[in-house]
Amino acid sequence: MKKLLFGFKLYYLIYLLLAFNAYINERKFMSYATLVLTAGGLLVLSCMVMQAGKYKDMYHIKLNLLFILSYVLSSVCTYRYGFTDNIKECIWLLLSMVVLYAAAYCYTPEEIKKEFRVLSVVWVIYCTVVNAISISMVVWGREYGVPTYYEGVKGYKVIGFKWGRLWGLYDDPNHGATIAAVAIILALYLIRSTEKKWLKAVWVLTIPVQFVYISLSDSRTGLVTLIVITFLWTAVSMYFRDRQKGMAAKRALGIGIVTGIVLSAAVAGAVYECEQQYNVVDKKLEASWKKKNKTPQKPVVSGQVGRKKDLVYDASNGRLDIWKSGFEIAKTSPVYGVSFRNMTAYAEENLPKTYLVNNGEGVKYDSLHNAAMDILVSQGIIGIIIVLLIVFTTVRLMKRKLGSVEVQDRELMLACFTALAAMGAGSMFLSMVFYLNAPQTYIFWLCFGYFVTFLQKEGRVE
Image (cartoon, rainbow, N blue to C red):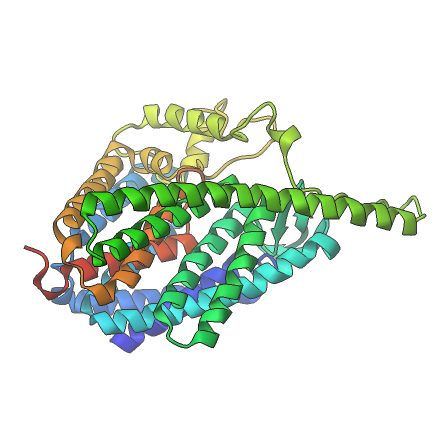
């Protein structure tokens, strides 16, 4: 069973990483890969159900199932706006909130560490290669395009560098930046958990690649996650280091927090400086290219990073209007919501003038770029209450049990907690963690399961 779980998790991770690769995600073979994922996920889920006794005492599992049942209720109540997509959504919720989350409960601590190390290596290596290629696209990939095959219809989409941002090999630079931010967390974990110096050096060298991509993506969501990572990793690491040296808890905590804030500010400044230095170099390159390119039919496309003109009238880049639209929809079905997959169709019929489906860009949005708002609209007050209970009980468990975490487990616990906090913070500006079948959702629930399992192991739960 453990080998089956690990094989599924590895396949699931590779599938999701490829699903966010603009060169690959709309290829025909990905539809077959989705079928394999679904079949494999349902097989693993069935095995877990047959062994339900092993998982029934895991913290939050009942609340997670209740959340999924709440989504089923929303889907049934709004079935006339669509049903098939909601069945798919329920499957994704089961895979993340049950399989990824609860599977760790039957593992030993060493098995968890081994599994996490393998998955981390895959994530970091993939992101390093993809982001290195993406960074090179500031030279050759300006307004670059790849063919698409959406629903059997051949199309064309522009990726690479456009609109003052590095998209690279991703369909969305915000997703690319947050995926890269996770790679930094996992690289830090690999550095700390690896004994071989040459291997530590390899993982250290991957971090600048992720950092440069995040900087050139001009993703404020990516910057938020990067700041959270820097602060938490620094503050917690210093706290435990100073406590081991015999320093008083309050003083160690204060030093850790102050140092975390200083380094976070430094990282934010480094991101800004990276953008500025790149723009200086880019201006020189563009000037050189213009001298060489004397054909007026081939103008040099600017590669300057920045969106000052786009954001001057709306610093939220449309998010405030989307959130306002979310509240308008929530008011019409406040208790059980309208279901995530039916959000757009519901708005079109009941609120045709709301921003979600009626805006100047002519875009019909299918998410609200905020996890809390997504839950409120999708599952109403019921969904919000369940999530608040998950948060409250997690904080209570941490308060009771973090002090008893063994020294050898702290590195993994730190990595998991940092990933949870970073993805949680990022989800306030980008829909992920709950309804989107994405790498960020995967790492959130995987790490949440690890984190809770370590708190429960060896009789830690009272």
